[in-house]
Each structure stands twice: as structure tokens, then as C-alpha cells.
Length: 517
Image (tube, rainbow, N blue to C red; front, side, top):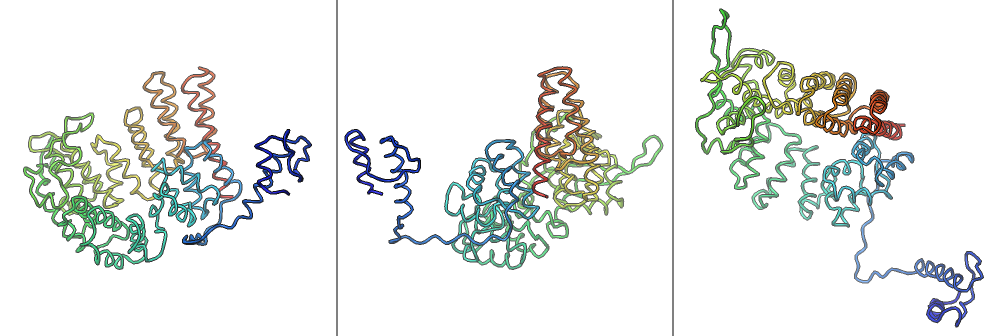
């Protein structure tokens, strides 16, 4: 075929004045103008294919590391393409998590679109890190828009050298991985550079101690309580609060026992043990050092339906109890957790409602922090007075798998119809199956049956949560609900949102089959 300049000249002068250079066109078109364009297209591809890239002064890019995991099946890859294009995009986190659990990775050709999704949605990033494979991190190292992925998981994007030369995220990922295999080695590695690091970096590095945390970390964490960085001190105190046998735990237990004591009272001719509450009167530097700020989170915030604002003394009490080893109370009252949480509670003035709320919220936070199933079980079943049901919902993650479903269903039934329901369900981990799913579907039905604007809004919120967590096996029941409401009110809110939920559940069912063939 003739050279490129001849084609350019013919194009500039027009085919009426200069005939196209001789050559074959893919289409065999005899029209001069179309033949010129066809030949130019073929010639352009040949020129580009034959070009030799210049490498003068340019460092070659290292090849992507070999992948250890297989690519997802073709059907699953096609569905991911549809999701990334906008179809049922809310199920993307579940697709990624299911792929990672199944030992699959995302196809390389879909990584750019996936990483772009993560750039605009921070909540997606952990799931992307689990399923993107080594190629995802390799791409993120070459595009600053995707740099969030480097260090988002356990892959630091390099070897041991990243500890010396990498970004903060890479170094955090390096320490996180090392904490998983050699906590002592990670602690020693951090100790050698601790004094030279900036406060934000020290805080980020110290957060990795949550992995593999043990009493061996106590001395390091105690020294971090004296750090000049506020965030470092707070992290150190939070981590020490997860070590009940530590000196920190003993200090908090001493403070807590000054706030709560047992007293026997005779009520209706029955002698009974009561818990009497006296919140701390003052706040000092030692309390601040151990992670209880002068104005803890929630100070002066509404306490809920039952009572007034939370003052600083009540907030100090909640914080102290949340950081106190739970064995303190079984030892003090000589009772198991279930009986402890059922004890009547009052303050010195005889106010039992507010005092019980403060104590139970403190105990609930402690059970969550210390991952204590016995206390979580007691607080969920003991009829506690906590008027923050989301605090109890967080405890569901502490229970053994075989207990979580029933406890969650009971909690949902307790708050059903209340404004807290969507907030509580937000904290209930999926998938929702069995008794829990039955409770959720019943809640959907009740909300759909009530023809008020508030209940329509609640139903829409519940359906958005069920989109992602309700077991797809319940699609037929939801479809039946949708049909009933569409028949009664075609185009109504209830029938519409329930129909949308049915479609999503069916989509998820097909999706999960493709990832677990």
C-alpha cells in the first residue's frame, strides 16, 4: 500500500482533484472518498503496530507479579460486567466478598472499572482489596487515582523494602501482614523507628496491633500512653482495654468499683441485692491518660426516649465501665453474667431508670470490646434497660454463629415498629436466614400494611437493607407480599419497593450460584 503522506495529500486536496493512491480496501468499496478512508484506517493500524517504543532514559516498568488465585468463572465475570455498568450495583460488595471467600479473583480486564468504582466509594475499598488480586495492587501503584488500594488489604505492593521506602499505607499493610505471622517481630520493627515517625504515622502503625493483640504488647502500649500525639494515646488506651489482665484493666477496675457497689434492700418483704451507682465526681490527668476524655462522646447528647441529656459525670461512668474487665462484676457480686445484668440498679437519689441505662450501656460496650460471649448473651437476653438498641445490636457479632440468628430475631421483634428499627438492622450482619429472616419479612409485611408516610419511608429503608442481606431463598415470600399490595394499590409505594426487592433477591441468587458452581 502507498505511503501515509500520499493519503494525507489526497485527503487535503479532495478525491475529485487527486485520486486515492492504489491499494486494497477491506470493503472493496469503489467510491473514491470511502476507499481513501478505508485505506487510511488500514495504514494507520499498520503504522502503529510497527512502531518501536523509545526507551531512551525511560525505566522499564516491572511486570505484574504472578497471580495465585484463579479468575472467576465466565458467567460470574459477565455478571460483574453488568454490575459495573450500573445494573443492581448495590450487590457489588456481596459479589466481591463471595468471590474472595470462594478463592477467586476479578478478571484483569475489569480491574480498571472496578478500581474506578472504589475511587468514588470508600466503603467498597476493603472488598475490592480482597478480590482484586496482585494485579489490582500493581495497577494502583501506577495510577494515583487508585492509590487507595495500596495497603488497603494485606498486600503492601512490594517486599520488605516497602518498610523503608513505601508510603504510609504500604508500611501499614506491611506491619499488618507481619502482625498476622510474627507479632513480636512487628513490634520490634516498629520500635526501632517509633521515635522518628510523625504522630499520624505512629497512630496508623499502632492500629495494626489490633491484629494478634496479646499481653506481650502491654509494655509497648503502656509507653504509648505517654505519647505526645493525642490519637496515639487514645489508640493505646483502647487496645489496653481489650486486655483484661493488664495493669490498665486493674486501674479501670479500681475506678469502677468506686462507682458501683452492692447493697441489700428489703422490698415487699423480700431481701434483694441492688447495684448502687455513684458516677465519678471529678476528672483528673490520670483518667485522661487512660483514655477517658473530659467530654467523652455523647456528653450532653440526648440519652433516648427514656430520659434527658447525658451529662459529663454519666459519660465518664459509661467510659470507665466500658474499659473495665467484666470479671470485675462477677467477682464483686459473686453471680454469673446473666444474674448480674438482671440485678435492680439505682443511684444514690433512687433514680433507677437513668442509672440502669448508664450501667448497661457501659457493660454492653465492654462486652463488645472484650469480645465476651457470656456477657453479650446476658445483655441480649436479660431484659436490660438500654434505650440504645443499636448498642445491643453490635453485640450480635460477639455471639457464636449458632446463637446469633435467634438473638437477632429477638432484638428485631423487640424494636419492631419503632424508629430505631432501621438503625438496628443496619448493625445486624448478613446473611439474614432462618428465624432472623422470618422476623425481617414479618417486619416488612407490617410496615407495608400501615398506610402512613412514616411507615412507607421505613419500608423503603428496610428494603434497601434487605437488598444486600436478606437470603435470596426468601424471594418467593417477598414476591407474594409485593403481589398482594400491587393488587390492592397498583403503583403504590409498598408494592413497588417490594417488587424491586424481589428482583434484587433473584439477581443475587443467580449471582451466588455462578460464584459457587
